[in-house]
Length: 310
Image (cartoon, rainbow, N blue to C red):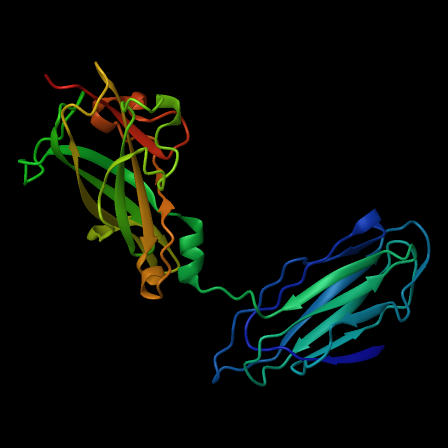
């Protein structure tokens, strides 16, 4: 048995393996160990079984080695791998004793009789809070979108059908685990130099943008039915004003396209300004148009008809 001392710290233990040519198999390819607090330090032991599935005798003596084992001290790695008959296994034992917080990663390399190297990757970089896990499970999604006349300050009568030149408010609600800022972008697909199939493809193409709202904070309207490990998703509501100016359209009715963008408040707090196109749910019935309220089928744009005024 060979003893190898390694170092790593207080968070997660991940093992990943490749079983090229299926000559050996490794158990538990992905193993996570919860981060330990300073007053709850406990020894963590993980055993990885290495099974010979080559159909012949395989000698793994001195074939289990560390990769990048410099500057590591919180782990002990041992193995009892020698000569294995077909379907026989041996064990690699990883013992973790938290000493301090010092992010590290290393690999364990097992070389089979075909000189194929199978990797087990061990790292404490991959611990993830339940809040981050919740956000990963549900990206922000627009769950309701309605257009109101600007004079309808109480948002009492959602509009349907087409829109004549004038000023409007679009109120939309986003379901999300994280607090976000939101922005509405309205594209006039009836401009003389625009073809409808190219309209609303990019937030930053100034030729296509007719009206935009500022990035604003949300009014949270309450908790949703979605939760994960104590983290609650909320309904976050935004309002964006847009204007349709008489004389800016080609003759007759044509498509308007609406996109919604968001940025997390956490990103804004550290000056990250990337805006992400918000996904639409599939049952919005925007402007009473049902499925026709979606611009094409990418799940990112809504549409309504604009009419040229007299």
